[in-house]
Each structure stands twice: as C-alpha cells, then as structure tokens.
Length: 458
Image (cartoon, rainbow, N blue to C red; front, side, top):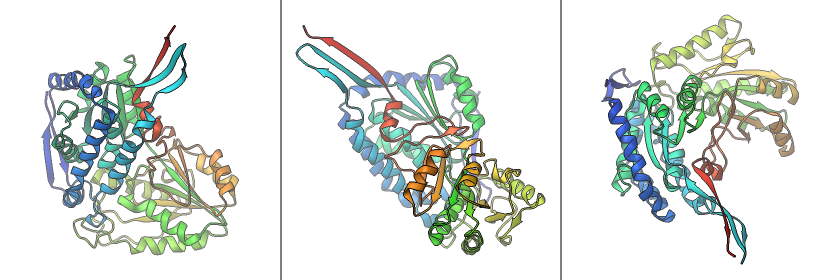
C-alpha cells in the first residue's frame, strides 16, 4: 500500500511538497537493480568513480542559491547562510583525495616465495537513511565514499527534506553515474524495515533518533548486514578558568543556536569555571539577544523557525519544566515567537541534572549553563549523560585538554572549537549516540570488507 509523504514548510505551515511512497514490490525491485548494477560499477577504475563523484558535487555547486532557498522552505534555515555547499564539497573532496591510499592493499609479504596481502572489496549495496537537519552534508558523508569504494547506494531521505534526495539524484545522474548505481527512493518505515529484514542491503547507515536506530538494528537482526548509527546527542562545552572568554562565548553560543539548535553536534549544555561564570553568562545573554528571529527567506534573519511545530513544542516543554523546577530564563520572549515553529532562543541558569533540559536531547535553540569548581566536577557532569558524540573544552593548555578528553566519554574531543565535522577524523559516538564510523580512512573501512590473499609462488 502506498502512502503520501508531505513536507510541511515551517515558514508558513503550508504543504511545500508531497510524494507517494513506493509499493513494497517496487522497492524490492529497486534494491535488486542496485545489486545487479554493483559488479559493473565496482569494475570501473577507482579514479573514474572518484572523478564522477567530484563531478556530481560540482553539479550541485551550480545551484547553491536554489539550495539555500529550498532549505529555507524545508527546514527553516535562513537564506543568509547560503545553504550547505561548503561543507558538502569539503567532505566529498577529502574522501575522493584519500581514496587511493585508504583503499590500497596492505602488503604483508611480497617475495619470490609468497604474496600475502589484505585488499578492500566493496561491501555491496549501501542504504543511507539521511536526516533533515543538514540534509546535503549528512547524506554525502556516506554517499561519496560508498560510491567511490565501488558500492551501489540507495538513499532514503527524511520526509522534511524529500527534495534534497531528488536534487542529489539529479546531480549524480547528470554527470553519468548510472541510475541503478545511485537511487533516491521515497519509502515508509514499514517498507524500509522489510527491505532490511529481507537482506536487500549489505550496509545500513542511519542518522536519527535512538528509537529509529533501535528499529534498524531489530530489522537487521539475523541478516548480518552492518548497521552504523548516529543517534541522539547532548554535547557539552566546558570553559576552564584559563579560557579565552570572548572566544568561548562567541563560539559556544553559536554552536548552541545555529540552525535553530538543530545540529547533531550542537552545544546543549555548558559548564563554566566559577571564576568566569558571571562574565560568561553576561556575554552569552548579550549575544543571544542580538539574534533576529524571523522568516528565513528574509536576508536580515539570523534565526529561523524550527523545522516543525512538534519539534518546537518539545523544546518549549523542556524549558517550561526547567523553569517550574527553579531554572532562570535570561532572554525575553520575542514578538516573532508565534507559539508554533518560531521559537525564541533561550539561555537558562540555575539548572541541574535533575532537569530534562540538562539530560535529554533538546535539539533546539536553548542551552543550560552551570558553574563548576574545576576539571573533576566538569568531567563528572559531562559524563552524566546517556549520549556521547562530541565534547568541547575551552582552555589555553593543550595538555590539560588532552587529559580531560581522555576522561570524557565521547566520540570527538574539541579544544577551542565546536560544532564542526572534520572529514579527516572518524565521525563516531558512544553510548546511546550509537556506533557510527563515518568519513576518514575508517569510513572507507566500514564501507568495504577485507579480503586476504595468501599466494604461494613456489
């Protein structure tokens, strides 16, 4: 049975676009075409596959103005930020640059007597289930290396960003990537799970909620498909007594508020050394008050609506609960706050870890700020979370940052920056954030399988 998937624009609540989902039989047929196309695609030279991916990225780059407007309509990000092409290109280009070295055989012995080596072979058919919050960049994280490594790819994009999947397919097909090698499918949850359970895919890459990741693992149980997940986050920032205060304020508050707080590695809680606490809060409040909430199609807007009314109401509920439990709000409600998708950015103090706002993923433009006495207390609080994606440490002491980072349960440790994905490093997490491993050399290893050769020459 087919259903209609609708994208409701947060700009004005209208239906921006709608698409029918595939029937189950048609979905299995599409997956079968992907599997049939894989040998010929994998047989192409690595350099050719990489060049086609580069060309597709360049094709997307021809329409960055359109990208920014379409993202504003779909997820509410202001057009002044120009879309996502910079990060999209950076990630794909880096993975193309390292492909030959990352996929090169590991030669253990090459003598007159033996050739012993480990090679990397494509895993097969890769399903990419991409989220809406950074729809181009999160998709390309896996799409680019998967195709370069010789896999075929099926992309299922989020309902809120259906158009992004279509734009990516248009670009890849326009430069010559065969239609069956890269497919964009509109699927409902039941069909997606049936495909996974039916062994349609060899690798499943999912970015989304914890519940969604659990559903992927249940569907894949017994199939031996690899499931890589990036799920929830509650990323902390810690400002030590020796930090550059102005830089910490500017970067951490931007990390909390950019994209209306809807960032996988956005800052959701901040711990500040007691000697800097009052000054940090003062600076943070001034910065947050400078944001202009409004229509994302207006070039003067710096903070747009959240992607859906439901998401905004979830954030309001966490804020209300915190205030009822004794937290203090520092930002006055904006006239543009409509009680629906448009939400005032908020800073909270007098918060505790008994409050959801400091423990559960919020994914909105609000951050709780707590005073701490030193490193030990900060580490304990940073680790007091079910999630572990990134942690941001602000200090002038590299050795201290490394020592603190070694104690923090997280996938990435930043010093004096945050909310950035470095394609040269593995993008991963721990605890309920899941067990992903994208980009970098490790990203290639997770999209291929090792094959050993032990050849006796005489």
